[in-house]
Image 1 (tube, rainbow, N blue to C red):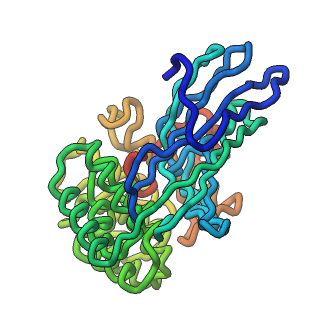
Image 2 (tube, one colour):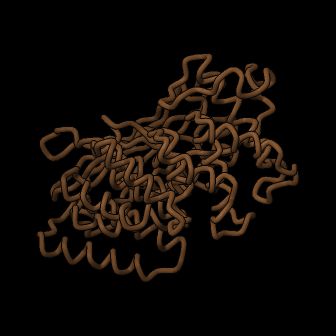
Amino acid sequence: MAGGGFSQSAGGEIVSGTAEPHEPDLGVTIRCDAPGLKAGDKIPITFAVENLGGNVYNYLDRSYDRSGRIREYELRVVDADMNPVPDPYATKGAIIGGGLCNRSQLARGESFTKTIALNRWALVTKPGTYHVTGIYHSDTGSKLFTTPPIAVEILPRNDAEMAAHVADLSEKLALSQDGEARLDLAERLVYTCDPRAVPAIIELYYDPGNARFWAGVGIHYYIPPGQEVTDALIGAATKRGLDGGILTAIERVGTPEQTIKSLISISLAPEHPAAWAEGAWGAQNYPDDAFTPRLIEIAMNSNSGSPTRDPDTLTARWSAISALAFNRTDESVAALKKLLDEPDDPSGISGEMTIRRVTEDAIRSAYEHAAYGGSTRGRPLRKDDFGPEFQQKRDTSTMQNVNLGPPTGGQTQ
């Protein structure tokens, strides 16, 4: 929040840029207010930003980014020997970016603080002294403010202590019903970077709340890869189907295609309704005619065992419709034609999106992919399957935003 002046950190004097036209003149420092941190802990670093110039500083105030970290609050870390500490995102990149924000202002002398987990920027897994430098990216994006480095001491945690720490976080996470508490516990569990956290992290894929975000982040960026992780992912999907984006993790560990197809079949089964959407999404990416009968059942909502207007069922129907359009069979074309005749009442999950319109968009999208070289592995629709109105390039500005990909949950900073 904006307010009066702030205290300097122990890291050194305030650094300010030379004022330029339309550029902010800011003082930026960082500090760590958490004593007694141990290896595997969440490490909070607080940015303090003060407006030293004569002009009002306008900036976007974000509390989260869907990539997992807010890029304007950058942290760089070296160990006691001045060797850079690995960045978890350095070689893998962000899964997705963006997020909601508010426009805020700082008058001269006003300041704000933002606390960022150092773990977002560095894999601090060992005890020792770390030197941390903050880089604040101004709202214009053209000016950087680099802070003096601060020293952060990380105490040791032996193997038995780490095992107990992981077990404690896992138990608390399993018992907690509070959304914010679960987010915090999941984040802390991921930062242990310990394979013993894998069972609890995988459980997050099946969490309908925002904490499921940390499953994908944990498996992709923080937990060391290995056969134990692969077996746990496949074991969970075999038992419960694909949900929460777990298919992406299974793909990334190099799972054979035939195993993935087996998991898709399990996910489309009537006894796994929560897995239908991701199973259908997988069926589009790993097409197989064996999936077609069950995709038709889900798309038609026949023998599904769920109410027509249940949100999970609707999402599954949308995904199944898309999968049918992207792998042509005589049966899939017949099903799509029936779906085009569905009543045009609102579906209940999106005020204007209907099954008929979802079907129209899926058919047009399939034709576009075939005509313009889009990536698809299934058989394309034939020109005589549907009329020419479905084979013209779409005006995407009027399309509804329907996410047919695997659900990944909300993300927090």
